[in-house]
Amino acid sequence: MRKLQQKPFSAALILATLWTGMTSAEAPAPADMAQEEAFLNVLPKVEVPDDVQPIPGAVNEEFRNCEAQWPPEYAMSQKGPEARAYRDIYGYVKVRNVIATSDCACAGKVAAWSDVDLIAAAIREEAGKERLSWQDTKAVFDASNEMFPVAETMCGGSF
Image 1 (cartoon, rainbow, N blue to C red):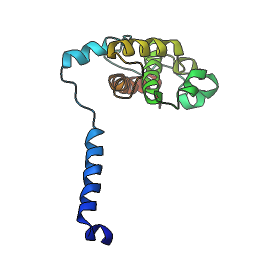
Image 2 (image 1 turned 120 degrees about the horizontal axis):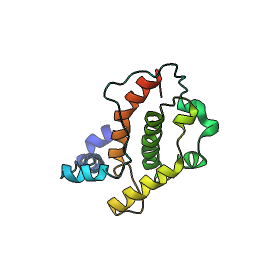
Image 3 (image 1 turned 90 degrees about the horizontal axis):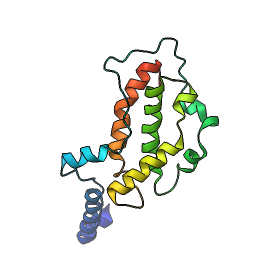
């Protein structure tokens, strides 16, 4: 700290660099909400009941306990430049699958990867990008986060 006090220019340069990095990391809000709604149209729809009730006799199995059934693509998608985007999409696909099938066991929570590929392709086309980032799938992430409490209520426990 003493060295920085002796060199005020260095301290100012470091702070400016940090400030620039922090401000550029923020994601801009969508300028047009209609554009945001159009983007959400690429997601397959799921019928969410108005009055969510636990499924009678449902046996809830947490997704993390279903690793033996995970699609191979899921394990491969945990690293790399599109990892977060693929996790966002798969989170949506698996929670949609549980709600649509009312299956709280591994069979319901481990969804087909082909749906992930279809959604990723639609988002790429909509965004005009080859590589997806978390900014491209934030709406997907938000949509899945809205559905997780529904699935957890239906299943009577953690996803």
